[in-house]
Length: 192
Image (cartoon, rainbow, N blue to C red; front, side, top):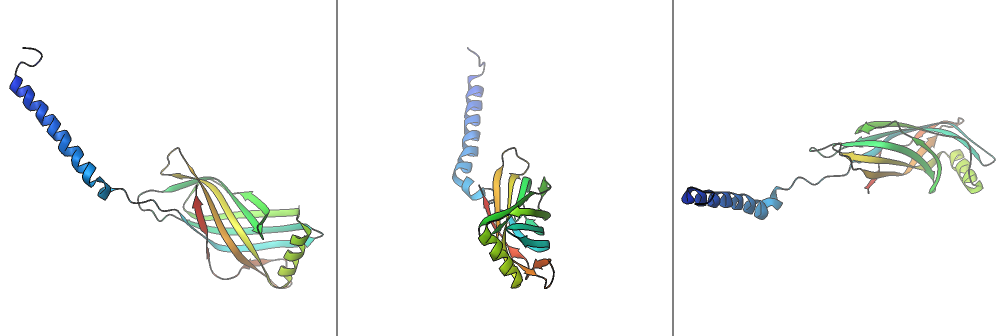
């Protein structure tokens, strides 16, 4: 009689197993796209404040300290991002003038970065333009945050580049100090 003593029972079990698989897989195939997980949104980043001290330009040598406070927000309710290998850079008219690592790893929330330039050589045109704008009351800088972003603590990561364009730092009259003019500034976030 073979392996199955009770042919009717075996046939019934095979039909039940096939039917159960078919009726489980078919609805998932037909209606699965309706029940997809929510689309993942990129983090939201903004510059909350910037303070500058020791601002000095002398014969194409720049010395300045920036204290940059950023907020990194996660618009996703179903997962979180974790960041590592973070670095903040300061640009003036698309030329990087200083860069510094950020304490990492970190999760969404406030980030404080201190970027310093100590007697850094800059092109003469940058030196003149910075000195002139500072004397007129303020300088526009672009701040960039680069970091590896890990979603839900998985092993693969994406490269995140945040660009905070044209943030005005207002010079305090008669001093080598300055602070951000206006309220917080939203930044553009790109994930690669």
